[in-house]
Length: 141
Image (cartoon, rainbow, N blue to C red):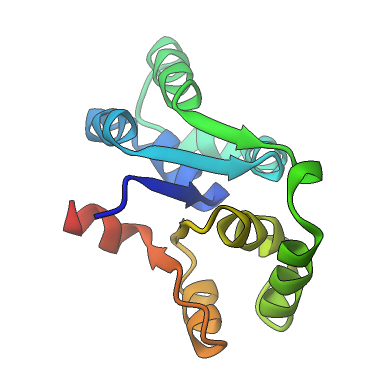
């Protein structure tokens, strides 16, 4: 089994909302990357995250610190142009906002973890197989 993955924002949101220590263990064992765009998306949904978590403010802050120290955020400017072009083509007619995640997966030759079934199925239809639903990942570890 691979030990490095690209995580999209909905995976990170799910981890943050859950507050489950099992995810901290997973983040210790596996190496996760995300494009810097993930931080923008997480900020857009901060109220949803804070409303849905079962942790109190201090527990959430401590948990979030632990999560974010385990995620490697990669700036878009270092991605190869051909990876971005291919990702745009793959994400066209699915969700163009996922381009940075797919481009990073292509650029680093890693599997993209997502909770977005539409994205996973859409990419598979376009013969892009380096995408896995997060629930399948968790089930298989």
